[in-house]
Length: 210
Image (cartoon, rainbow, N blue to C red; front, side, top):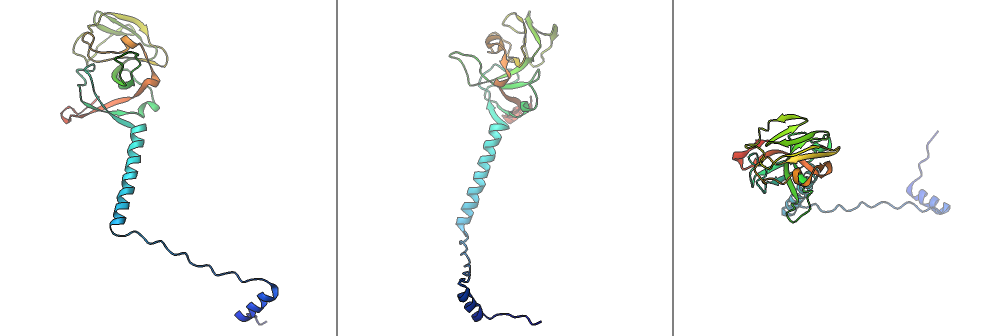
């Protein structure tokens, strides 16, 4: 059987007879001119800066931050104007441990209130703490604090038991009135703790893991 292939003219007559208009041919969209030369280089740098800014913002908000030591309450471990690397995500998967150096929101209410404090976790939930004759006792046992250089000079304290979801914090500086801590503003709720200080990163001569 022979196949019939109508010519273009026959197709036109058939379209007229049936009242069907032939589909218009699609025109190719004109391509946008690509950036070239210095414009392309500026656009590439702009994109890189935007990405870098977003990455740094997300890391600083959710993962880490740099914190500067402002006072003397953590001497001899930390000194004023040192920079700390603070891990902000560590406590999303665990809880603060005894001995951790932490950054917390200042829970005190008064004219000397700061935005943030750097302290050491001394007691965790359930611990029974007492300061007697310049020595720290945790759960009835004398605790040797190797990060301090003097006995506690502020007098006796306690005994107190750390509540669930709270932490007892102190500064490493145990000289009289050298540290504002849980002896002043009581136990710290866990949601006030913003991260764990892990490294001294500046000055380089003091670089150390905490």
